[in-house]
Length: 573
Image (spheres, rainbow, N blue to C red):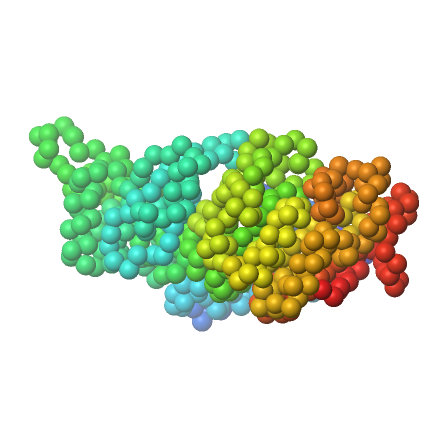
């Protein structure tokens, strides 16, 4: 590609034949912007059906043309239109991630100029309320008329209320991981018994906060969205809501008020504080907070605004799969390297509950291939995994146990949609299959383990509806499922080759890497997903792993047809 400086000079000469263009050093009121080249361009446009030249600034970033130019319009007439930042006056002319021809620099500049002209003619002097409604969050979060920054450290758990009500929540101190700065995080629940709120209280030092939600408080259809105290009162259309607001404000003095801003996933708010009810010339108690809100210096004072994000099953579903997935309840027995990392995959289902059982705790030796790391050392694995999952979704329904699979109640097992047995304990697996044969366990199970050195990974899908296969699997379990292993039977009697293992081929301390676990589970998970959706007869799947290590260490493998690393094999049961 030619030198950008040279191409820009050529473009400047060509475009100057059509437009009044001047290269400048800065943009009025925005002198501190990081810049390379800045052009001031007079763009002819119809403004209220009258032709005029609109002064526009085009800023070319250092990595232009691989980043778009910035188009900035300082003219105050246009500051409240859609798709322009009130603070920076930068236009949003393209979708994020727009793909364009970086070699056609003149064409790119022309397109920015043309889009700017169309933007002016399309939005200025017209009703743009539908445009604001589509992306109300962006416009609500702007700073209007010199007001304070909108506080967006607010979350509402559950659905937006349909009626005026008082809600409770908690505030706690959060830390910015980038620079260590602290901020207050506020979480409010529409249900005081919300499980996510209870989880937050357990994990943080919190203080109680209260919020009044006012159903009849309506914001205007277009910016600016800043409000004075009187404007808040005027926007409450229901007399009973106005009385409730007055009573609430007079009781608390400092209050948080929520209200709908026209979406099913965002709520606006205001924070009313520092109202001086004791003033010279007035008897104590003569002035109420409600009266002071609309008098004295508060008459024209802009209130602090809040932006509240909605955290609910429906909102999370909209932003992930598009809908709430089928209810699923997963029982994971054994939370070592395979079981813990499997939880990462299963956590992708947006409507899943978990039962986690493991008697062990996390040690330094585990963290080389476990899902969790240093911060969880000396924690029980079941509690640690539950904490990890609830950091993602504090409302996750998770039951934690410290017992063997065979110690669980049959009712708890049969409440699961599916079981994942990652214990490395053949006796637990034999017990499970016998329980299926006797009719006590009626839900499908996945038995997973890796062979030493990650030479292969085995997953047995056991469907109790396919009783003949369960009978066959009982016999294979009595032989430690050795027929499914890629390593030959006699090698498991040689402790010099296969070290750090427990009895049977499910060696809990077999040597393999975190990468082996990832490769194994990423191969098996599409199959798991399919079988959860459409159960089939019992099957065994084998992932071919580090067969090169087997050659180096002279570990004998079962003769099969030609296979390569990462092959997936189906074996009869």
